[in-house]
Length: 170
Image (cartoon, rainbow, N blue to C red; front, side):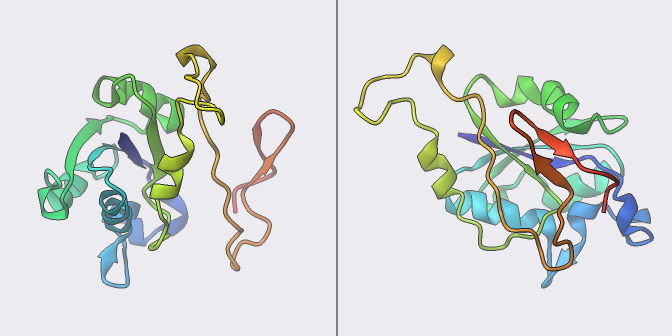
């Protein structure tokens, strides 16, 4: 299984810190945000990682390199301007392949998240052990976490069939 870490955004809400440093490289507890993800992914056995970048992307590549110092293999999907989530995935499909992959934001701090639990739900068999045809398997999973104390209302809301942006970004 592979993972894609989104790291192409400008980080407008963190300016001026992000004027000279990409948001995923901002340090928390002495470590860049994105490195917390890489270490957690490797701990779960997910070592093939694709990272997209645009703004100050060379800094991300210089900091992370090929990923070997973390026990990972990192490939980069370069974007001249940030393509947003779906565009970033489309641009990186040649690196991701045809198998399911994890997708996560590189600017979120969750140092102890256990990606092993996510791998456990990506089954190709039903509860009786029968193989599920590829066209009937789940396309994606949404993993929900509680809103942080500093943003109790969150940025998005679930509707019956989608995720909606409820109002202005926070």
